[in-house]
Image (tube, rainbow, N blue to C red; front, side, top):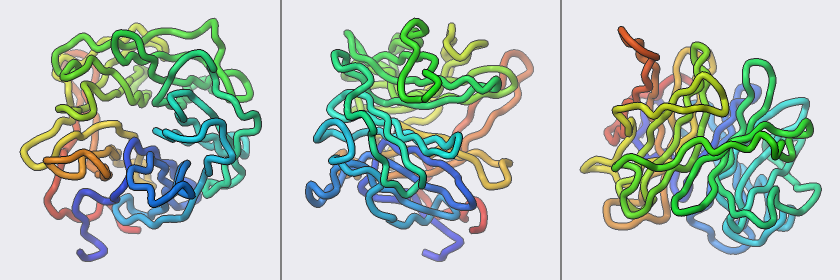
Length: 303
């Protein structure tokens, strides 16, 4: 494949991705679905200039630098006040580690989860226009549900009094094999809050949709034409995404995982496609995904 072309999937052995753009380079963190041995327990970091061609830059967080010993899933990355913060789940509990470099090493200064007695996964940082930070994540009840809260000033915890349940699976496409709303990712667009998420069991017809609110903690109204990303005859299990932009901020992209092929889930693989807002005659702008695309296509922009 020529350097100015690519074909999905763009990276093997990864799931549950998150990306940050920092000083001219994209850094990607993901669940490692193809570990060779225990030395890869934790999170790798990958680098790219164009979102299509990725380089393995080694371990960003090692298990020894965190609470927990296994099931390192779904990292989420931000940079603020001179520090990188990595939020992630380990043994179905949430942890936050920090580093001075996007390459790591990320270290959890106090090795304990956010809530020792509550299982939680799929955390996501979001900063509102007024500078307030929020954390979104999943809790388990009779379904996988999305919750949110304001963060503490040190960005290492949440303000418990603000904890709010935001989404529960209540439509047919979200309830295949198990009722699931998970993998939250927030966008602020024209004063509205777009909470994107994935639905249904990850082994089933997994997909992604969104809900809209006037406030970062709801009430959220689900888009009537969800899901906006769904499996087709060529690719299965698409979901758990992050969203990023081109260096000039003109174009928006969705990075998500898919099953290894049509017959088995793991090791999962990453794909990247365009996502955009489209204006409507009535009501808020809608989110549209151009994908999943599986044919060769030009790189979105030049490195």
